[in-house]
Length: 162
Length: 367
Image (cartoon, rainbow over all chains, first blue to last red):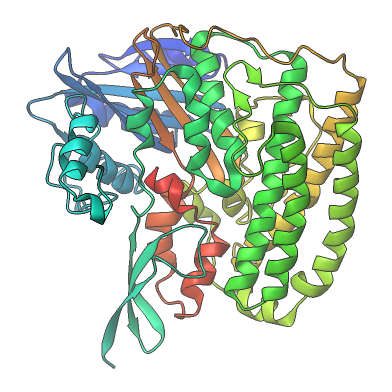
């Protein structure tokens, strides 16, 4: 099946905005409240594998974007299911019921971007240790300032800068 | 019996890097495990947002130490897809050559590591020694041994030196000869068989459910491979069939790599044969590195690394650096959730061995 034909089939899902990006890659935008249904629809259609959950901070639009990167080994096609959630209330529902591996991906997104996934039981610290600052992958987290504040306070004799 | 909480790592023989597991043991049987990644977090994704597009490969080749070329190429391909550029034919073949050589050296590292974790230290010495012949080739081609910083958006940095293909073939002949000696000392060794057969069996249905990729998935009988499913570089023109096995135990996972090692040698020979017959010179397109702007949009590119699907999701806002770059490391599935579930019921001695048998690469979880 060609990208166009698959895109037409996906477009039958109410509210889906489908775009063929390039050979083998299709982007599907849906409103946040329909995200879970759309994911179930895509899974049923053949996009049975969750490769990754990507998260992007669109700070100018005051939104977070979650990209569910799906792959179909049968159709040899990737679909990026995109939902946007407000930046001031970063909450979403877990997709663990569809793909158990979503637990780890969501755990990472929670730590790095501060998005809370409802019903995910394992949103514990993942990669960072004792992190009390702003989630580091947010665009308003200033890495240079953080490094300066943290490491300038260390005396030279203990490995800090002079 | 009383259960004991044990912190295993972050330094232990089971891993190429630092990775810790908190295991709860009853006697010497594991009843619960919690993977603790993060010791190698260097914030590459955040750093990339402050770098030019062309400054990516020197940073991200460090994502997986034994298999650096796949990281460089994955990122480069994602940027090429966004910018809409096509690498010249010879460039694609040189890219595939570095990728297959990288796979060979990563598999040698794997043989060494798994051998070491079950006490076969001779194998560890042999494999690391043989890997050096591949590193010598890399040094001649790229100027570097471990991090090659060779595959850039647009193609490899330069053409192969005169007579390089012959020297590659010579090393392949050597490795093929050595593989027979490995068979005698390692793959038919009673210690190896006893420690790996029927240990930590992964079923095909489980691999599918948990999104396991790469040789681990193929060792369960699931015939998937990014080289076939989403072809890139010169792979569509190369002749190879996927190898699969059905057992899914530690033995099958090691033998899967042993069989793919032979396959990679054959692939390298196909590539060098083709490179000899091609006109030299045209290997890459060079954009202005400092002012190169990439059109708005997003792209994903995946490569079949020695550990599984390694993907790069790149977002551009039309500027001179990535707006967002996210890595999908293969170990994110088999290194955290899958490992935590599979180690339960195994013996303490297999905590390190299973980690190597699954080929967990902690830096691609931590990034």
